[in-house]
Length: 342
Ligand code: KG4
Ligand code: ZN
Image 1 (cartoon, rainbow, N blue to C red):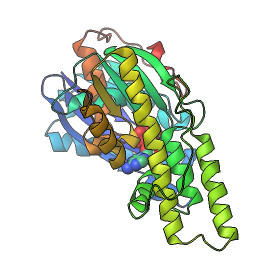
Image 2: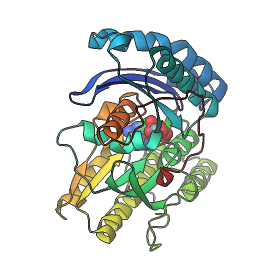
Image 3: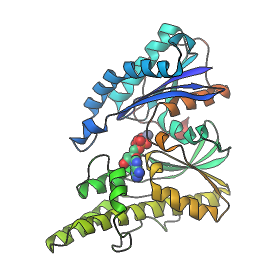
Image 4: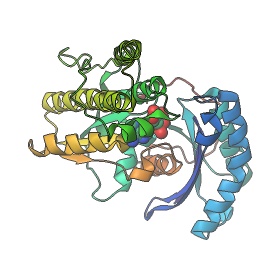
């Protein structure tokens, strides 16, 4: 079966074609980063309008890339949540309309399920069960994944997500949006050990995270240096490196505890922060020693994309978890949606 998938939960419009037998056939993506950069963050109304502008051309393009037509499609998938309500409604209404016009099933996909199954598009493919470290701009969670649709939350952030901590600290340091990649780049020129930053909840005996104190610590160090005329380029680079190391060390330490508690030997990392090079390095190093296999999505599929949505739907279809029969079409979205409730 061939699935056409739409992602529009935040600031990327993604459209993809996935075959249940042959995997990813083609995907197209438009990032709104340049548009939102002028405002220092995502402007929801502008995001929705841009999804409207992009989705049809991207759909034409993806069909052309795969040398297919709408008549070759067997099912439509779309991100139904969590995310920005207006942005989700664009993808949902386009997906439902296409499905209705072709008399095809429309499959609502949870954005985070898309992220956490995405490493299964790569080779080698992680087998179930595994621990998933989900690190995006809006979420930081550790989950036990027993099968498609069987997710147990082990721990999550109590305040800012890891990506948010990267973004907010980057803003303090005068870097652009999105902050994660910019902060990671500046960190390459810094000394991560020169400035000591807290490791929030490192020894909390739970698998929960808290990152909101980190930006306050960085702000305090920055203000202090500014008042003494010492806030030069090197200090900013050192602060960037110290922030990156603090976030990454907490993520690695909690992942190790989650693997110990569950006695599982596989870790899957997903979400935008999964593109971070230091996180990849430290996880591979530390877990290699423990005979734990670590899986990352292909770099280009770490951040939001349509491929992960079409792929999650394909996985659900293969396991008989989708109603492919008579459909009722509606534009329901879930801006807040608990993954464990699936
Ligand atoms: O998964 P994603 O594309 O969108 C959400 O669903 O939130 O994740 C975006 C987040 C942003 O916070 C961005 O700064 C962060 O991922 N990010 C990174 C890197 N690339 C993206 N953070 C650290 N290092 C990176 N290389
Ligand atoms: Zn995401």
